[in-house]
Image (cartoon, rainbow, N blue to C red; front, side):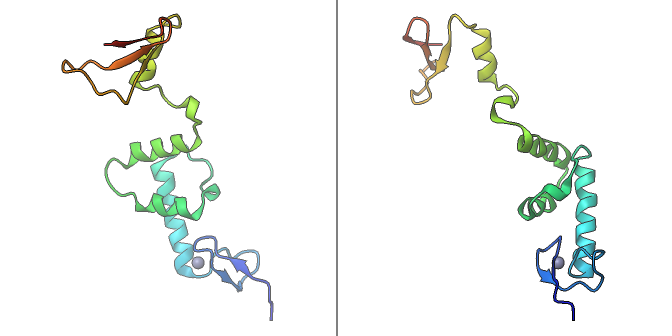
Length: 133
Ligand SMILES: [Zn+2]
């Protein structure tokens, strides 16, 4: 009896393969599930180059997605997975920072609540004062 065991590529369970080197999954259902999952991932995100690199946990969340917004969502997820924090798309705040220029930087002070007219507190880094805008 061959005592060498494989780990199922789908559910991770250890099993003794009936077909050495060919078999990747413990059972037919795992093989089919894995196939369907790969197909799904490809459909969701064609740019996703190597689904095998994903952890089992990732796979779970992929299969859990099932609504119409899926395309965008999946792309966003894939993007944020591989995008470093500093390379993420600029937020409104980031753009505002850029627009105010390098000479004068305004930093939104988050723990001061807005004024009655809706203006927020900012710290002016050049003059080192607090202003409302
Ligand atoms: Zn399995």
